[in-house]
Length: 279
Image 1 (cartoon, rainbow, N blue to C red):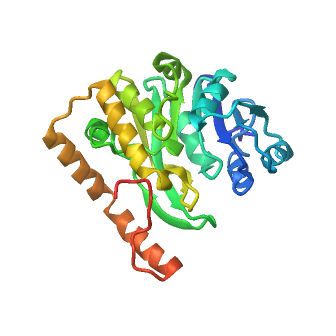
Image 2: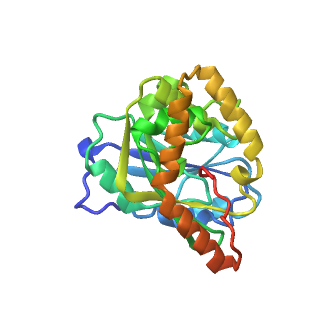
């Protein structure tokens, strides 16, 4: 249950959606990360597309509801999960990622009447759950320039968005198999949605591992992002695109250093570990 000292403004509710398919390897750590959140105001829902491993049994053991969604892509499952809930705020995390409860509660406690998307920073972890490096998201003023560069300026596991925004945008567009989250937040930005950046604590941990879609289909993700940009007819000057990319690198210069040193320490190789962030 949520601590009595934490009071979400106006008792606004939050649903966390996790799409799964044979996710037993990491799903328990994901569920444990939301345990302190779950209560009268927060709900975690598993949307499973026919797992034949222990995924749903693990969810049941942790008293987390799961529902079935016909196989498709993960955004189909996310849309279905959101449609089956009624909260004010929504986020989704993959089964291999984790949320940081204190940061989520602190951000909501500060109040969010004037925004449609709340987002923060994230940590990167490896397959064993060991810290790799921190990553700072872009400020709201940097969003357009980074979107135009096909760079996701905010880290999806570290976001909350209003259900009303999801409804306004028609949900995640399932024609995008790998980059519907990029498309969703790009369309939110283009529609005038209000983004609020919470920079005090990281919101989530994003796990890097060999089976990860974002690492194995980077070219397809880039192609989809370019199509999404064309769809929205986003107009950003070349100067702004170059300048915001430079600013994003500069604001994360410490992360590059830590990333390099942690990779060397963990794997005895001098190399920048691969992430979904701007390289």
